[in-house]
Image (tube, rainbow, N blue to C red; front, side, top):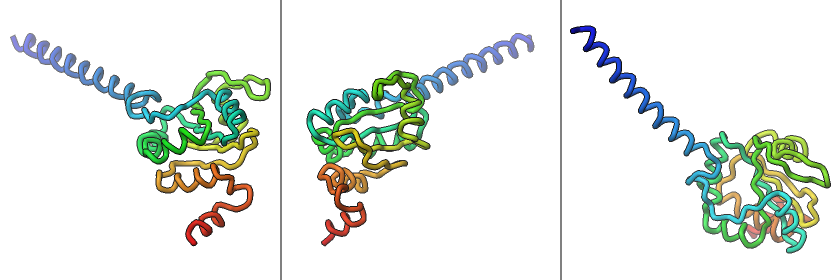
Length: 181
């Protein structure tokens, strides 16, 4: 009799454990998936090649957003910075945008050579941590990179500095001094 009770209790614990484990895995899958609900920022992200083409055709700068699926600061950037209405309007209108997953083996073409997104991140753009943003001129020349999370209130003046071409004549510090006069 005591043995049957223990068996039932063990089965109950097993089922409870199994249910909790399943819920935990489903939650993690949703939370860490790069295109899950938290990352919907309504920005017109393009492939790498499409962004470079759009930049060249429309004569606008390119913003390359390098991220990783398991990056907490990337999630924060996507949840907070990229969802800002001002940031979305400016990026959507005045930049060619590409998201590049630093852990992906998806192929991209750079100057006729094939690379994975992982190689594009580490070899071509020498990204050492995520998130990292690279700005390119419309002729695909590298302007500057920004490693790490950037809050929207700090990101907005950087975007204006790049969009308006002030980087050609002024350092960002000189630009901010000009703006504060």
